[in-house]
Structure formats: structure tokens, C-alpha cells
Length: 420
Image (cartoon, rainbow, N blue to C red):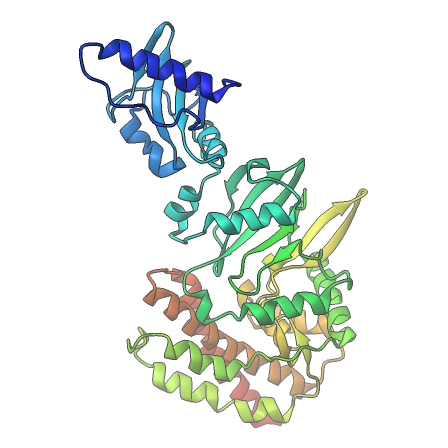
């Protein structure tokens, strides 16, 4: 990069004047306009691509002024100009475009651009929000690098990035989450669990838009729901969490949210022909659940195997529970049902999990109540999936499994109730 932007601007203008010496030249623009340059590495997957194919301006917000190739300089190249390895691209743009340009020419999928987020998940993330993240970390926007898309979650989208030698995860709410997640309530949950050791404290959370930054944990693995050792550790952690009896001001109403998610379908009917009967069956379980609910405290709600993270600390594997956005006051035994649902357990595995949690001392009414929760939560997430379908996001087999559990465990719960 030229150290003197003014000098670079002068040289480019001089070249332009030589090329069109016979033409009357308009007055030059302010030569303090910032100019930058970057060399196209021979390892870049952008080699031999045209400026138009690169979508350079759309990706970076910057404009190419010239391309230097050896002793030749192509001033104001058009969209068909092809970039070669070793070319020096001279461009102008806002200061934060420098990082975007740098990442554009990095081989592979790694990019650090607002465009990447908009293109891949169709979520508008304003540069001011990324600037807020940089401010929180005591950094400049240009200090953020190695921005990589992580696996797309069911509710949100996550990105790994580096800043000043540390790695972080940026969480951006997914499609339609404004209608299903209260971010102010989520922020209050993180305040409630701060310092408990249940998970790392968040670095930053914005209760207005759901933007969240957390530390990246190296060497993490999730719970294997078919490994008894893993599952026992997770159930021990759940008991410890529930035993703390944390409280917040809001609750998570399972039966109320079944109705709420349905209301978001924009008048479209369920894809399940027997939905009305299934819903009526599930709603009929509410009385038994309320009759047999003995505990009420902060509950995770989304306590699925993927949210139990095992990670090494000084050579010893530690466990934490992440993703608390659905958490609220509820019967803590809902967390057991959620773990079973997501794991696609059969009844023998469900009973085994219940025994792990209660250490073999679960009474029959509580067990049936958990069957009721499995049925109710199956319909809950089925309705949630149908809302996502309205938004154009399909969850395929997951959605079908949830609806199947709703019907199957309604029948199981009813049969067991009749035996009481």
C-alpha cells in the first residue's frame, strides 16, 4: 500500500492525463480521496476472474481505480477486465472496505464482508452493528478478520471471527425470529445465569436486535445422546441447574406458544390433514400437566444434546449448556422432554433418560407428565417448523418427526393415565 495517498492520487491523475492528452480534461477531484492497493495472490480463487464476475463493488463497497501489471497500468478498468496473479489492484472506498477487499482475495470461502452475510442468509446487518461489536472488544473494525460462516442453526446464523488474537462467535437472528424470540427476555436470562458456571458469560448481547458475541471454545464436542456417560453427565448438569431455582420475570408457555406459532402461518392451513384433531388431543393434556406440576423455575426449554458442550480446560473436559434464547419460567421437567424429542428416542431410551435424571426414583405421575410434555413439545416444534416453512425455510424430517411424536406420545400418555 502506498504510504502517501495524495501521491498515489497524483500519479494516477498524471497517467490519465497522458492517455487523453488530446482531450480537454475536467478539473480533478479532491486528491485527498483515500487510495489503497492490494496484490492478487497466486493462491487466490479469484485469479482469472473479471471485475464483473467478482462483483467487486457489491462485495466490498470499494471501487477499482486501476490495475497495475508489471510496467502496465490499466486506469479505470471496466467490468470485463480480468485479474491475474500478481496484479496490483488500486481502489478507493471507505476505510472499512479494506478488510473486505483483503478477504475477497483470500482463497476458499472465508470472507469478511457485509455482503457475505446479506447473500448467504439474507439478513441485513448494518455496518454500525459490526462497529458496535468492534467497540465492545476495544478494537477497530479493521481488527476483525477471518470471518467464517459456521453451520447454519435452526433459529439463528453463527459466524466465527478473530479479533486481536482471540476468536469469537457472532450470533445473528435468523428468519422470522423477531416473532418467536423476545431478545429483551433473553438478555435477562443471561444476566440471571451469569457467574453460575452453567456457561461462559456472554461478551455482548443486544436486547434490541439479538446480536450476540461469545467466546469461541477450542476443542468443543457436543453430547452424544447414545453414549450413556455423556447423557449421565448432561442429566447431572440439568439437575444442578434446576436445583439452583433461578427465577426471571417471564415464562415459556408451551400450550400458549402452540397457538402463537400457529397464528404466524398467515392463514395457511397445516400440511397435516389431521392437525385439528391432533391439536385438540394435545390441548386435552394440559389439565393433567398442571395438576402434576410440582416445580416451577428457570428452565432452558431447548436443552437438546447439541446445546451441551464438552470442552477441555487444562486437560480436563468441562461441560456447559449454551443457547438460552427460549429459556423462561417453566416446569424443569420440560427440559427432559426436549432432550428426548431432539434425540429421537424410542420409549425405552426415554425411560432410561428419565431414570438417569431422577437417579431411579421417578414416580409414575411424573413419568406420565413427561410423556405429556413430549407430546405437547412435539406439536410445539412442529408448529414452529410450519411457521419457518411459511418463511421459505424447510426442516424436512425434523418437522415430520416432531409431529409424529405429538401423536404417538399423546396415545402413550393417555393409556398410562387410564392405569392410574
